[in-house]
Amino acid sequence: MNLLTASLLDPTLFVIGIAMFAVLFVPFSPMTIDLLTLPRHYQIGIYRRRHVFWAIGIACFALLLARAAAAQLPALGWVGSVVGFAHPGWFVVTVITIAVLAVAFWSGYVPYVMTPPRNPKVLTAAEGDEFLKPDDVVLGFEYRGQARAYPRDAISRPHFYVDDVADTRFVVSYCILCNSAMAFRSELGGRPLDLMSVTAFNNNIVYYDPVSGNFIQQLEGRVIDGPDAGTELELFPVTITSWGEWRRLFPETTLYYAPDQTLRDRIVSKMLQVMIPIHRLARRSKPWHRIRGSLDPRLPAMSFVYGVRVHGEACAYPESALRRSGVINDTVGGEPIVVFFDDSKSVGQVFSRCLSGRALHFVPEAGSEGSWAARDRETSSRWSVTGEAIAGPLQGNQLTPVPHVNRLFWFSWALFNPYSHIVEGDQDNPGQQGGERCQSSRRQAAVKEGHR
Image (cartoon, rainbow, N blue to C red; front, side, top):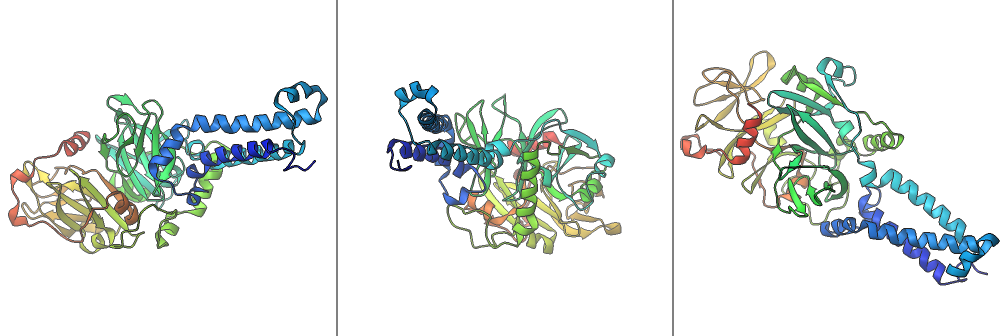
């Protein structure tokens, strides 16, 4: 009896089973996502109905195994009288297929492999020196006077950590394909979030909260699907810099230490570090994965920018321009802002220019002993890249950080902010400043509260 023609039912069961698992796997694995670049709402729809696909696929394979087993085991003849008989070869084919699928899902299915590690530790800066070199890249986060660093190589696999800083729970989020980092409160509408990474759309991670049923696109900073669709997250800035530089800026910093525990997680992390390190991504001319839509040609796709979005207005500040100028004054969404950049350390930050009801205008100025600072024209006070006045009449004052995305790839910012302006120099006229332009938005006020 021929294996494939013995019964149309058996190959039909096999094809349907394979199809169900393929639908579950292909759009949700970095290994296969380029085979079928689905619209985002299709990906979300599949994930919402994943239990249906699982049930159909398992049922097809179970029925095929039962039919094949009944054909070769007399003791299971009664099973064959119910479900029929298949060529015994189908048993071997199905078992091998199940084994291959199990390995694929175990090693490459995003909801399984992108889970945060358990039992993290918070180390002192001195303890952190035992695990990190000065030039190792970290994500730096500061809230209410507490500074915390997160090793970029470690967070690249899970794409987020949940951490308590100054008695407040945050999600510190990072997507390696965009080099995009941000933090937001781990709650929505007063309910705690319990996130998991589920897929990537246009090379950017999508999170899912099983409790509420909400899906969150990292770079949009809002709920894109679910009961709270359209709700914006309360965002806080994260700085991408080196461990040595972060320690210099915040000597009392601590380090979030969460090494991979399982074999699978160690394997996946190593694959990410070898296959798609940032230095390799930055040398490319296009994103790692295919995208839906087109690349914005105004800047090289993989060039670094600082992305700011206030009151619906988006602006991108190319790092190449910041290296030339050091300071860019601008007004975004009606809010006066300034972008500081230290070229010697490749570290930058974005702040509100509003202080005590007036908007300051900043110019670059080299600091003493190689440190970097800006000077405001109004009082000639000098400011560090952390937004603190370090000398002059305003010494001791602190500028309010503006939520932004620090050193991400241009292609990703443009895909999720297609009407973004590109700003390569000062857009502010210091002669037109006025206190009426310094009415802080609710978003900036919330960030300011966190830095008191």
